Length: 157
Image 1: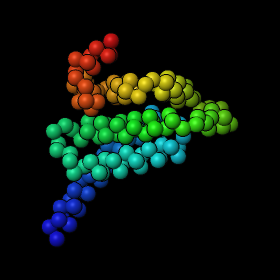
Image 2: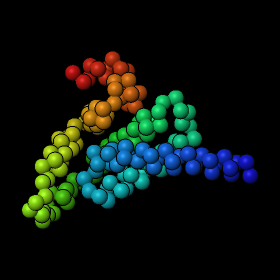
Image 3: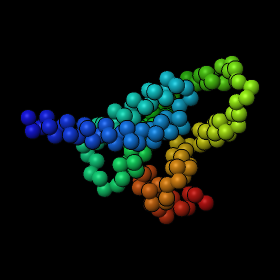
Image 4: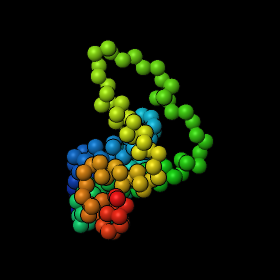
């Protein structure tokens, strides 16, 4: 009975933290996928990895920092595995879209261009740029990626 209560409490804390910080996972998924199905698959895989690792989360770092680390490591691992597969055409690039005439998609296009450019980077550089754009300080970037702060400052130059 005590174990069941502890597990329920652990599960409740995890779900609350995940719900509060799920945008982190969505942003990582957007960075490492090209379509909605892949995004959803990666989101699910990251959530599974977060849940598996959660009992070992000691709280030494902020939950969001730890979440970035698990999410990026999961995405990078799957990204590297997917590089071994046959390349296919990005569905969005061939899909005909009808836009409303009064809709200003300038910001959306700029974000897509930025994401497309960042997607060309290597997996670690991609993570560095992502965390930088998320306005994380050097120490949090270093902690999230498991690199020293000195290395982080050198790479940002």
